[in-house]
Image 1 (cartoon, one colour):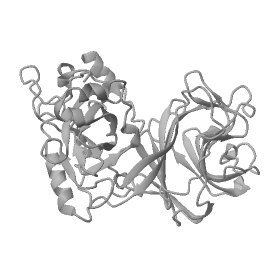
Image 2 (cartoon, helix red, strand yellow; image 1 turned 60 degrees about the vertical axis):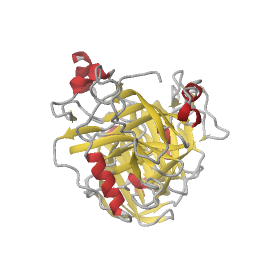
Image 3 (tube, one colour; image 1 turned 180 degrees about the vertical axis):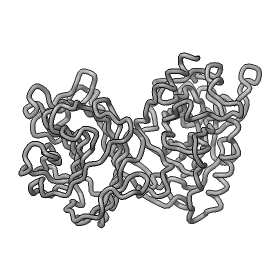
Image 4 (spheres, one colour; image 1 turned 90 degrees about the vertical axis):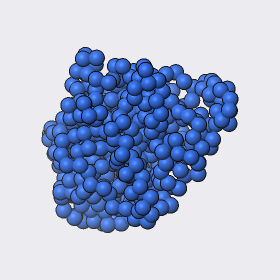
Length: 476
C-alpha cells in the first residue's frame, strides 16, 4: 500500500474526458453545469485508418500510428500531412475534447477554431517570428508550441490576410505544462465565449461581441478573470471547423470527441437538473440496485476496500493536497426500472454530465442482472465510467457520482446501506467522498428558479460528508 500511495502522491494523472466545475468567482468561462452534452462526432483512430470520406478533410494524407493515434507530419512534414479538419461545420454550441502532443522541433503546431474548411491554412500558425509574416491563415489559431518562444502559447485572430497584421498575443503556459507529452484539451464554444481547458483546468476564455455571428471585437481573460488581451478589433467567423496542424513537426492527436452543448439555467426545467435530485434509496426514482466495481484516484485503480482505507484521514475525509488529488473516477453499473439518459458527477451543488461517462455493456451483463428475477428482471442495466476532476478545488468539497434517468430525475449513487458489517464496516457502494484542499470553502453558487429544491439537495449532499468510502471491486 505504501508503494501504491507513494506513486499516487508522486504522479498526478489528469482527467481525460471532463473538467472542473468549481471555478474562480471572477472567471469569464461558461458554467458547464448548465450544459447538457450530446455527442455528434468521435474518433479514437482505433481502426488504424483515417476516414477522409465522412470524418476528416485533409490536404495531404496524414497517417495513423500502430497504437491508434492520428500522426501529422513525418520525414516530409508537407507530404505526410500538415492539417486535418473535422468535417463538421460548427454553427451551434459545442464542446470538443482531444489529446495532443508533439516535439519542440521547429516553427509551431496546435489547433484552429472557426476556421473555414478550405482556404484556412492554420499550418501557417500565428507567425511569432517564423517563417514568413506574409503567409495567410483564417480562424482563431492556437499555437500550443511556439519554437522561438518556448514556454508560451500563442493565440492569433487570423482574417485571411497577412498573418503579421492579425491581432495576436503570447501567453505563459500553465504551471508544469509540457507540450511534448500527451495533454488533454477541451474547447467550449458557446458563441460569445470560447474557453480552452488544459488537463482539466481552465486556461483562457475568449470573449467575443457576437453570439455565433461574425464577431469584430474580442478580449482574452485568464481563469482568475484577469485580462490578458484588452478588447481588440478582430475578424472572427460565426461558424467554421476545428482543425489540427503542424509546421515541421511530428504531432499526435487522439480521442477526439465533439459534442453539441445545450445550455439552460442551473435549476427548474434545465435538462441537467430535470425533475429534481434524489438519493438512491429514495422512493419513486425506480432504483433497483447498482455496483461500484472500481474506484480510481488520478486515473489509477486504487484497489479494494482493505487496501484503500489507509487513504482516509482520522475524520473520514481525504487530504487532497497530500494525496496529489487531480481526479476521482468510478466504474460500475446501475439498474433502474426506467432507461438511463446519462451519467455525471456532482461537486457540492453543481452537476456535470458527459456522454463519455456511459460505458459499453459487456456481453452478458444485462442478461445476468435481469436473470436475478424480481425487479431486476424488468430493469435497464447500464455500465458507467465517470471521472470527476478535482484539481483546482479549495476547502472542503463533497464529490458524488450521479445518473440522470429518462424522466429527468437525477439520482445520486449514494447507497449507504451496509454490505457486510463484519468484513467492511463502511458502505461498499457509496460514491460520496469528502475531499479537503487548502484554502477557503467554495461559496454556494447563486440559484435561480426553484431555489428551495436546489438548496435542499445541496444540504443533503453535504450532510453525508462523514460517510466517505472507496468500494471493493466485484464482477457484478
